Image 1: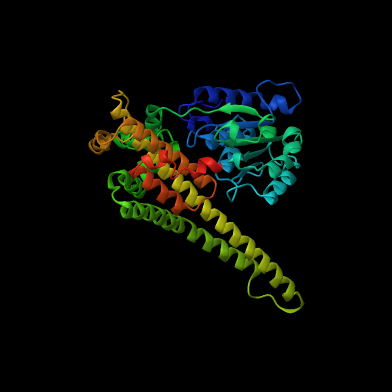
Image 2: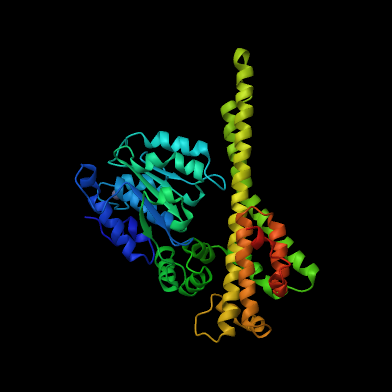
Length: 410
Ligand SMILES: [Zn+2]
């Protein structure tokens, strides 16, 4: 019998109710596959929760439990194969670009029509189901509503509202909560052996984002980048300094994205060159050259999309950190007895708090939320951040309407 403390669901931090629900589904799955009626198991799931709450961990835990003969022991061959992303019956899909592409959806549906090869279930875990556009999502409806026997869809998204109504109505909805700081810190100590003080800092600073908490607890560079972002509110001076801070941030994020994407791009480029080679000879040469050209063009487009996405995710993270900062300012201004996200910056936060009033702080938070929406709408990052730093310096600009055009145009 699987030891519940060590099985695949053990990695979900602070989500007891969801874990119970998914365990029940896994326990019922063999009977459901045999055609018996089941209330706990179903063929389409939508797992939602704020970023970092563990959506993909939950989805992959359920996927693993469905292909493991003992419901997700975490140690057998099936479980190991899923862990190393090489299980033939578990497909973990992360959209390459900002949205799912028609070609990606077509490939998925083709694959979903096939029966599982080595397990009872053929499981598709789709990350970022909120990135399914109407055309692409609707092309998948039939496959999600009446899948091939044995096929299971597990979709992940920040919230149900972010997902096409046609898709979410066909799924069973599971909601993850933001895990408590205490639960995240305890998880870091037990799973990574992180020092308790560091774990507590990382849990607070990540505001319940588990992946981010792990990075902050273990990666010095991530901690330094975060510090740079949090210095922005303290360095806002004249217009020139605001623009320079925005430029610095965007430049750093682009450099980070390059550091992350360049080696991946180079590796994929080399792999594709190995396929098409320089050694083609004779009659087939023209065809090979034409195909190679198409393949390289596709690859370069993919690389561009990936880089855009990495940049966008990092910019979003900076905004979340800044929202945490101004939330702390508000906590001090209102005299609330709540733990500060950035407790180690209390003196600086108190300085900002005493130099302004709560309505201004709210306008600043509002400006940050607006920047987030601008980035989601693909407004150039530098422009969005220049407008942001100028508004953070003088939030009355926002209320006067000078930088509010986005509200009007939607
Ligand atoms: Zn197992």
